[in-house]
Length: 308
Length: 332
Image (cartoon, rainbow over all chains, first blue to last red; front, side):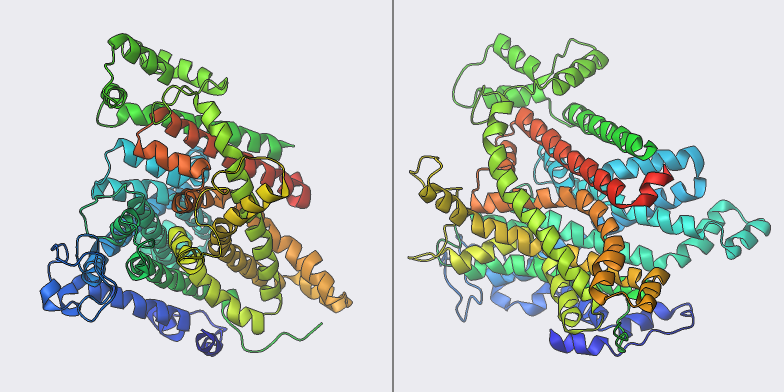
């Protein structure tokens, strides 16, 4: 950890405004962003080509074996489940569903929050009051209990339902930030000149406003994805997911149900959670780094302040 | 004063929204609650007469022959007056309020103490980290707590169990709220047992919750330290400690305080998972059980209660901001 920290001090804040397209370079410069990006890339690889990382005999991770509840060994790297399935294979193959939930739900929530936040700021007046009030209400409503109530009614185990519910409950925080930033942009000169040019509102929002907000939007997506990963895993862990699906939350559900810890199989009980945690960490690191990129005041500085 | 009235208005409005969600979710979802109830009631082999079913449904607020608007008004009235119906889950027929009353103190004690502790600790550490920008603490704190704030609650819980509570001679117990076979009493032995059972769940909440506070407080602190009044205070030669807490810290703390109330919903979600892993008989565990046994009245009452708790906290934090921040008083 300390090595990463020492390295971050190297990025010096630039006095001039960052040129367009500097986002990618900014990510390369920021160590936190690099670590997060590498982790995320690894997970994308695992999700896309799971068969490369799993020995050939376990290419069907749901196949029932004859050796249930084994500890880690040279054939079963992380042991076996109560049905003799290989835990390592399940872990790798589960990456796909968990990543898809994170990205789809994160994207959905971000799009919703951009639409609601930007239109609240842009429309102003009564519409703004109404939309802001709705945002605040959704922000305060305890989402996880709401998700549980919704998932219980809507039928347990449906992946689409879980994603829709995650989107419906995950947009409010972002919408609030979007509204604040769009409000601060509203009276800037470059928007004024676009208005004078006679551009349509839709053009102004898409071409002028949104690109200026891109780093906030990206940060928002990462936050929403992190929230989705953790919440989806929690739901599945409680048994509200599809018990036959391959995802980390479901693995945890079975590990808990078949008493993995009590049977002395910590590898089985902890590895899916570790995977969730690592994916979460990669989103969180990227998110924090984007915060630093979009807010220069937060960037690490080398020189110490003169002591008062 | 207008500020406070607006916040009170928000309180009432949000509570109404929660109740309305509670009313409409079961009516909009596929599958009739009547069928679900009949299934539940006849699960133990008991024969349910239409009469009985009707009574239970009426308790629940359902009456298929009645106008929806009328039902809604009646539902709102019974919610406000505390008639929250009876459980249709494992403890059939027990009033929901009784069940909640039994579980509430445990959750309040466990979650309340650990959440407030996490908030206070996180704010303090964040203040120091932001103050000593680029110092030793600031070097270690952000990366470590970015990681802990992204950890799933239940995973931390499982990790702690496997470290401290598994084996032939575990250091700490891993389930329930006190040793089985003890009778609740105000004896030293009983209190010790409660504390021993609370350590692991509380540590779980503390580990996962503290990171967010540290990071936001540090970032607020960094932003505030760049303000002119801080420079002015330095120029006047005011001692560093006083600038740190009285000038920068006090202002950086305000957004954190409003954030605290907002994030409570997230803490509660973690509590459900933590209590589930530790079999801790609080509200979160009850929530889980209500889900498993599709005990709709209990589920809805719990959701309402949780919303109410968050809202009360939001209101309290609003009052605190009102007291601490002159701008909120004059802004109106």
